[in-house]
Length: 116
Length: 115
Image 1 (cartoon, each protein chain N blue to C red):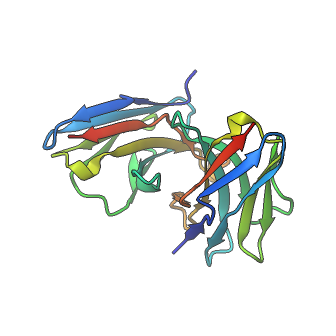
Image 2 (image 1 turned 120 degrees about the vertical axis):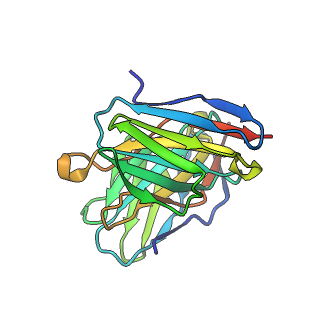
């Protein structure tokens, strides 16, 4: 009965590789997000999708490409990984206030990405 | 631009005592939402409490309450009767207005509950 799930939980890879992180939510929410938490624990929005449409893209390098096959899934693909990409990536979801939601964002468990 | 400030990098409290974690925010929009999240050492982000800018009363959720002072632009989290399991990072966040719904986070406060 996991609400927001992410796979994998840990990802260790070499510089230059391409990797993907998957996210799924079973809350019936309309909006999904990707956040990055750096080594100093600072959290920053990367992307947001509403009903499979991109609505936020926060000056993220185009090596990062989100994909939403349906409103329950939002995957993150990263090309040509760099050392600076090492971080914890969180997926989150929320229900629009206009659709009766509370706007609260619920987070997945995070994916710790380490680029060597 | 919206901004969240948490001025306490670390806080210590004795078990069973109350503790207040500070949060101030900056926005020019009259409609916004304020959130607190807990991040234990295991890493997950746990939603604790929400306060809307138009809410007349301070939000409460069990041992958590939010001391919302709109004129001062502060939204401090009060944890009553601290427990050892409350030791964690605590993040204050604001929903950016304008329909984007993104959260802007503060830098967090690390709370340690001593036995």
